[in-house]
Amino acid sequence: MLQSKLFTKTSKNVPTDEQAVNAQLLIRAGYIDKQMSGVYNYLPLGWKVFKKIEQIIREQMDAIGAQEMEMTSLQPKELWETTNRWITPEEIMYKFEEKSGQAVGLAWTHEEAVTRIATRFISSYRDLPKYVYQLQTKFRNEPRAKSGIIRTREFVMKDLYSFHASETDLDKYYELVKQSYIKIFKLCGLEVLVVEASGGAFTKKYSHEFQVLTEAGEDTIIYCQYCKYAQNKEVAKGKTGDKCNFCNTGILQQGKSVEVGNIFKLGTKFSESLGLFYTNEAGKKNPVIMASYGIGPGRIMGTVVEVSHDDKGIIWPKTIAPFLVNLLVLSKDKKIQKKAFELYNFLLKNNVAVLFDDRLESAGTKFKDSDLLGIPYRIVISDKSGSKIEFKTRESPKTELITKQQLLNKISVR
Image 1 (spheres, rainbow, N blue to C red):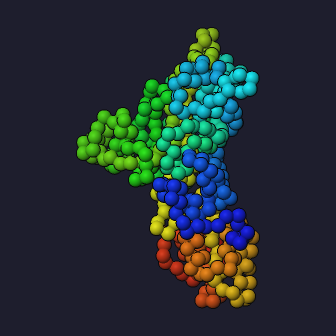
Image 2: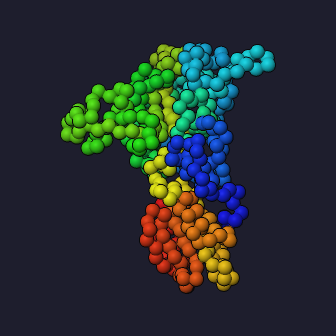
Image 3: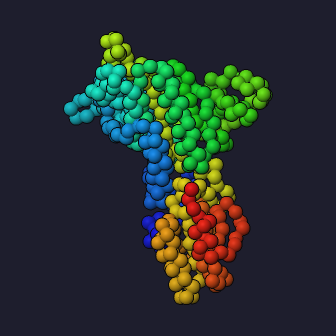
């Protein structure tokens, strides 16, 4: 991609209406645009990052046997009344009345919808277990939409739903998803703690959250640095300074964190309300046992920025960066520019995603923009680089002169 053709431009100005670092940097770098409070547009660079996160999620969901689908955002009042959640989440759900007089809501989650669909296809123990997921837009009237793209009112969520004949089978898959989530976050450049938490509006049982420690976090967790056992402060049985009862070795600490994913054992709450039953081998009807599992790609993106930036800009992990290489040419000499274009084409032929800063800007402007954009590798062609290429990683100030082949060896993605 030639930077001169890029739809967006960087900005020096920090948005005055944004408190969160992720929003400030992503807006300045041209990754996102603010539509209104809690609502953001993903611009071409931001959409590249978003789609890479989505692809990591999709690959891991497919790997554990889940099948992708998509459900509607528009939901009838009658469906939500079956589980008494038309009134309960009053502060969350957007509702309106159609011209026909029918009351409709915008889905903030899809347990009711997926359970109703499942009644068409699950009736016997032979039909179980089943796992389906979607990457779909949710709407939530968030009263705390002040954390950039970490907490928004319109967002895409990956929600997975599993259906089981027994608690044992559910527990087995629940653990499989838990490990899959840890892998997803690691691939996106995040280290998470698996945290016990309340089930909220979903279930009375404990749920598990995947939390990333950062001062930008809205949650407070109690955790053991030694064994990584953690609980959300609202359900924690210990406090800072206590010995961890789980390992009986580490000392409990308290920290602020961002929730990047969660998983819930729903039990039979939704299946009983919506008539999702199966017949077992003895011919007896039983309610299907369910669980749900959520991840927000946008929330991952915002959290990565919060934990991976410096005073110059964003530092993207290689796996989700919009481009792997940022090529800068720092000369008006036609021979030097020709060399830069030859290198650009060489990288493209070798399937390297590269953003080529071919603009007629000063070296200072190009370096500042490169740091702000946060692309993992920066290479420079200039009067000083001679027959070689000036190379550096985004997180390091150290530069070195290397050859084309050395460059290819250094920038493998995984």
